[in-house]
Image 1 (cartoon, helix red, strand yellow):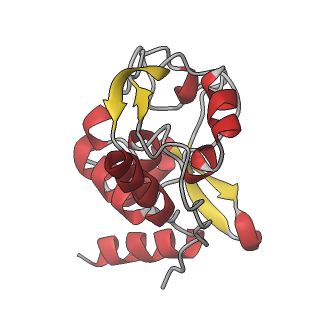
Image 2 (cartoon, one colour):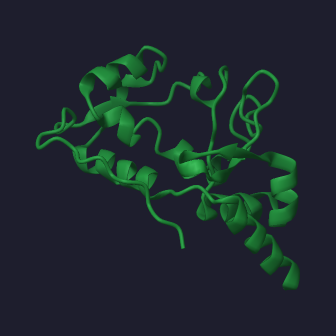
Length: 168
């Protein structure tokens, strides 16, 4: 059983109570250019395996790596290319329809919504933040909750999924 990450209490009146503007500009900054991790949950892994029509074992071997995570655990993450681009990036996301929740909820990640100053600091690197489509408070909160609830798979959990798949 996986425990969820602690949810940071949001201020009584979040700075985004009237919504925020964000529209992806397809710059790919959030998909590479610097080291990082795209952690995969069970939902993410199964969706990507189905999308690529691959077994869990083959997908993990081809596209994934193990990453150190909070509490000394080791979790599943997508690989990066040598230039730090996501392994699934090729002039666009090659798995866009099955992209991980971490990707689909950007930039409405809990830590980015803690304070307006954090949001504005992140917007310096993302040309889509503060422009384009207006997201309501409810839409932002739905994405924030999805991000928080999307718990990365631990190594032991992936090994169990592979074993179960091999039995089938």
